[in-house]
Length: 341
Image (cartoon, rainbow, N blue to C red):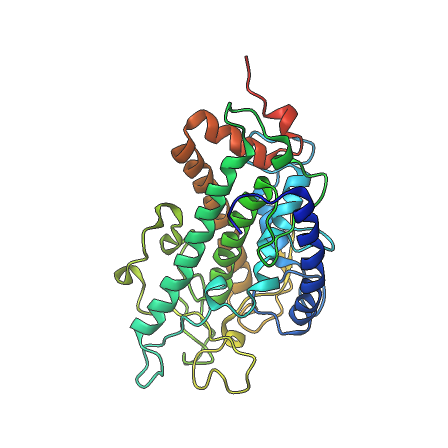
């Protein structure tokens, strides 16, 4: 997906092929129980990933980007809009059953006899963070191609006359590739807050497999540092941290903490403010947990985008890195991001 760009003809052929392949995947995604913050507006989901991303990254209406927020057309590529998943929703098309893409299966309880040790759960979480670090780095690498060698904007690699394609590794314009890397990383970051007990409060009564303890910790989480590629240290993972086991196989999670008992995936989110209402999962309705997960996801989405911009300037130099950020956030970058002077 991150190799040399194909010719326009090959891109068109690949896009047609992926459209054929993605259709059954989307059908499966829509009929399967929600595994993450929602990406569609059906079956109990309310495009939660899109709304979180918009609340975090959108420019104020009618305000041009200063390179830190996304203008409408570019925002639609990373967040999605009606009828599209966007980059942040891409893992729900072709990585539905990849636990690391959603920070699933890092489950552990300190109670005696729990079938997963702390070390096993931590390794699963390290796999998630490593996957997200790789996606983040892929985005930074791809972003280089949005500029020509002389620092001017590369029109063919930054144009959004057609929507980007983010599924099944189909190569595309470098702006699309950069947005895809960032968006896939953001998906997992957002899911961490929905799928774990990091920001949670447990329900009253005894805690256990169906009512895991809540850590009630602030966001952004230091565990989700995606810059630099440094592995997550086991010593930095709280002993009581857990995510849920996800499986479509009956009894596939056995006596483990299950996704259905821990997730805060669905509810109403205002895409302008991030305000929440109407949580629909049991854990989300407990202790304000849906709102806590959403606010954590919004805060960390902003942190990751700030870190992405820092990575651009650290990799390509201040002037070039800031111009790349301009290209990614502006809808008419050839005009708006041209070198001054």
